[in-house]
Image (cartoon, rainbow, N blue to C red; front, side):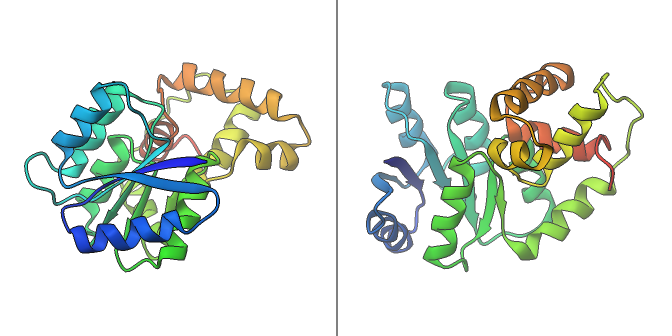
Length: 212
């Protein structure tokens, strides 16, 4: 059972999302917070969910800074932004701070559940309308010729990771085992000097490590 927390100061909206989550047979939401500070306090006591849905415009610490703080305590937690903001700066900052997904609040409960499933399975989720915007943000930035010594196979797998594919999906595409793909992924993380998938995707797009 996938454990989900929500950080959202609009309690009516939070209750709607929580209800949708708890009606599913594979995930649950038992914790709702109206600010990042309360979530961090609960997290510091040893409680840890699989995934957190967070707004950006929150009282006290904003959601983008909250992502960084949460990741500093438990980097294994997947985080999906759920907000009304679709401007470039917030999308860029959220992804760079470790967000694994970025959804707008006009997403249906079904789309939010699909996003949770995708992220927990190792993928990345973003509103289709924002995908091109994200690509444009990173592709417009200065690229570097540093390839970090990635092999041809590692570059291929990196490209699939950027496209949001899971380890199992990559294994099927490349006709290898999930264990082999996972070994390549670990090597890529080490060479590129990142610790999270979102950080890898951010750096790969920012520095032009994958062909676009």
